[in-house]
Length: 493
Image 1 (spheres, rainbow, N blue to C red):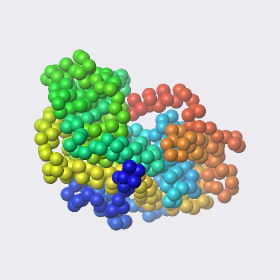
Image 2: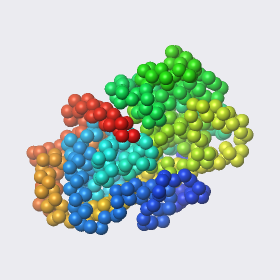
Image 3: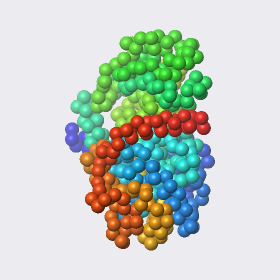
Image 4: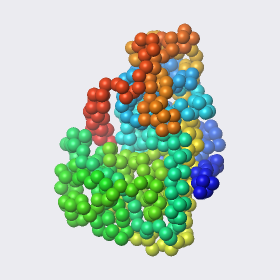
């Protein structure tokens, strides 16, 4: 079993595993400098397009200096990589969540295993995107684009892969579970499977004035609405669907907006009594007993869901619920080849066709093979590490940040002029777990005169603390800021 598991988790080092990549749908106006053999692959092309939205590649020292100066003005979301260190502000707006620990540990992996040049960027911790005034003008890394490719920022893998070691173990665990259970196609349950939660958030989280009139796919409650609609499919046809919520709460949009449910008797019935669609928690290792896996938008903002990270390699057909959000590898997806897209009206006929298809049929083989290839090319541990490494290098290259950050004297001048000692900059020193971190420790910057950041050293000698030791009220403060940001993003969508 162990040897078979290793074979299953091996990531094939091919430039393009998906047949005829040119046939895949691409974001609008794709253009990018051809800097390596990988640039023709559409996710890398999308990185190039996102960079070019900021303007042509900078080669001017003065422009690089201005970009770095402007980055310093946004310390709450600023990440600096310099001389093998990760430097952030004590007031880094995302320190109270686990996601920054995941991201910083991935960057630390690249630094330690492969080396990484100096760079700097804005980090957006939210799946709903970030302030356009920031992300459209300064290099910003985002984990998803809530409203599609036209959102600003450069997409990178979402943080829930954590580190390559963690993700490799997770894949191996799933592979072993499938092998032990002898998951042949004929032995799998011929149903669509999903487990998760639906949440009833306060209407204050959303733009309440437009709650009932905003197109539902553009609502930040879309994930909860989509999950409830998908669960309704089980109520209507339990022979084809095993889509159930573990925690079932009526989405505020469906409660407050009767126009959303008036024409759907099944949905109204489910909202009245959840017993028909409530299900027990199922460990991810047991998902493979089913043939078809459904991915639904997330509950927080209707953006990506981390469950999709592991679905591509389960040996089944991936079904994506129709949505606007995109992730870094989505340009490599093609509806009908790598997956099938469904919604509340198309789901039953699409799944009925799948259920009738004989084992080994061309349609099934295409979907199964292409789903696995998506994993092997874009979601394997080394693939994710490679993508992160390339994006970080391209950000520095496109904005010519290396021109200023590689010159200690010039860096010092910019930092001193900016009065960086007031920024509370600190170094990310260590993690509570090198492979599966949940928090990180910050320590005072070096005061060595050779270090340009010595001008920014903050705190008393020996100052160090874990990010979780910060003001507990920070969680509440950041939640309020997130609500304001969501309202602003929805108004501008």
